[in-house]
Length: 99
Image 1 (cartoon, rainbow, N blue to C red):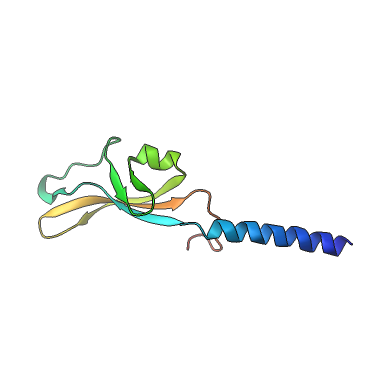
Image 2: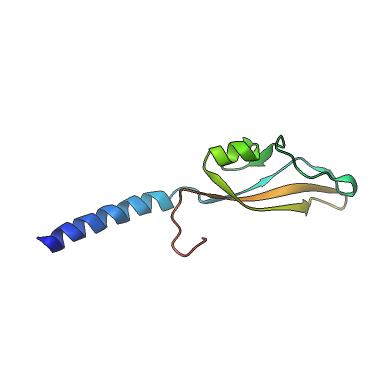
């Protein structure tokens, strides 16, 4: 009987984790384009465009369950750059640290 209870509990846990891992776990977002020579750093009012998370500020992304992994400037062409955010969901369980 104990084995059956353990199996049922383990199966329920695996089903719950499988549902969580099916969610979008990461996203890459971009801030507004600006000339690289005079680029200013993003502020708390900077809106980032994210394919999965939508267009939001960093505070709004955090409130929606996204965690900041990295912020870095990227060159869009020979003249323009934009801040790039790499995000991960705070509520997603990862098998080996990061997928």
